[in-house]
Length: 80
Image 1 (cartoon, rainbow, N blue to C red):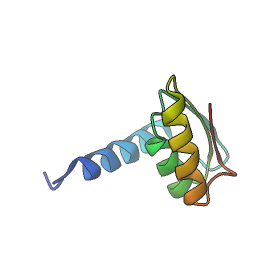
Image 2: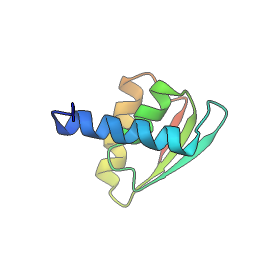
Image 3: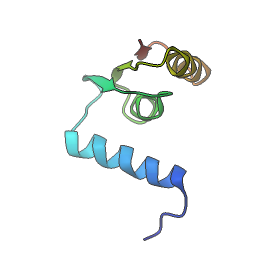
Image 4: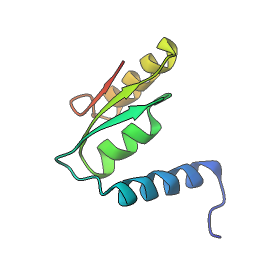
């Protein structure tokens, strides 16, 4: 009831996903259909686990890689 924007809703969904799956820092997650890497970035930032994101769009993969580098997460996140 306190969610007021799409950004907040996506953050809440990522949080619920991570909690429900019990993702830990030692895990390596496969993010299928990763888009521009939003969920992968969330997992890297908040949990510190490794994530491999795959997507059909080369443009989105390039954007995801850019976001990971900008956030200092390129060592944890890999996109194809």
